[in-house]
Image 1 (tube, rainbow, N blue to C red):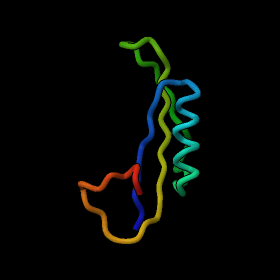
Image 2 (image 1 turned 120 degrees about the vertical axis):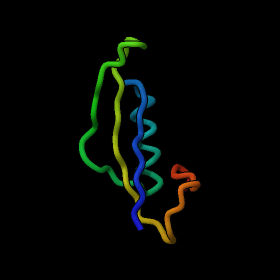
Image 3 (image 1 turned 30 degrees about the vertical axis):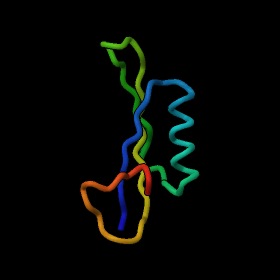
Image 4 (image 1 turned 90 degrees about the vertical axis):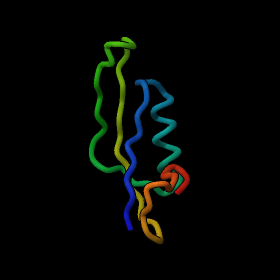
Length: 67
């Protein structure tokens, strides 16, 4: 089955590291990254969707980042 995550972070190297870590664990990019200005914090925010094929069935209490 395929699972989905949306990774988000301020527009810093931390975002790139978060996405790179997910890729190293077998996640695959899904679509293009998105950017938006967070007016409350005064910073740009990034988002990247990723997906992964796993064995078994989905359940809402699974920790997606540990898959």
